[in-house]
Image (cartoon, rainbow, N blue to C red; front, top):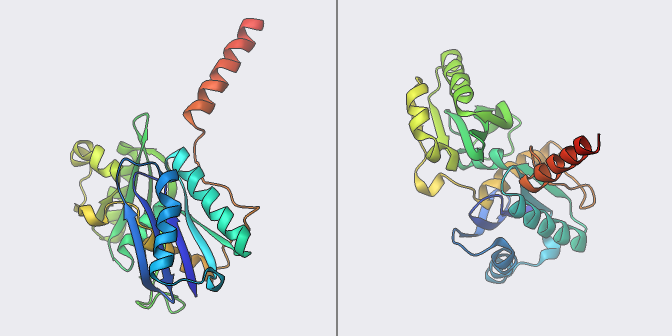
Length: 253
């Protein structure tokens, strides 16, 4: 099983090739260039370096959201173009599940957090358990304890405190939301917790590929025509447009 995985949901742009669960190549750039400038050249470079025949790919995995609206559109358009050209299925990996896979096999309660603005984060809570049907070689599979959603930091910390009481598992926090709201977290989160180091705190295409393997085994794929990003919220431009429309309607009445 050979997967091309891409992630452009946040500041990093990342592309990886994973074959039979083993990482063959990964290219990640966290810099001020736009993903439209970097993503395709990165894919071309790792394809060249690994002498990849794209006809041998089995699927394209993409971090589908939430995240930057522009970044998600670029990633989805790239995945759709490759999938259409090669008649491949797309695995639409929720961004926070891909981030949690940075710690595949961990017994901690893994909580990726992305800044959602408006005093909220996009967050999910995950852990790993032994599974005789696991497709990853460590014999562990992801368990979703809270599906990704926009939530206040205060409410999220309350949920984490509750889950610690129920499970006794320490909490692992990662993502730009954990960095941005650390002061609030330290005031509210009573459960034992730790923060991811810099090299495992953000999105990586290789982790998207790991989660995609589990989703593929469960038959969770899409065609290029079916694929859509996972926004969770409408964009700022869409909110402004809606507000102006409502104001115009009120003025007309």
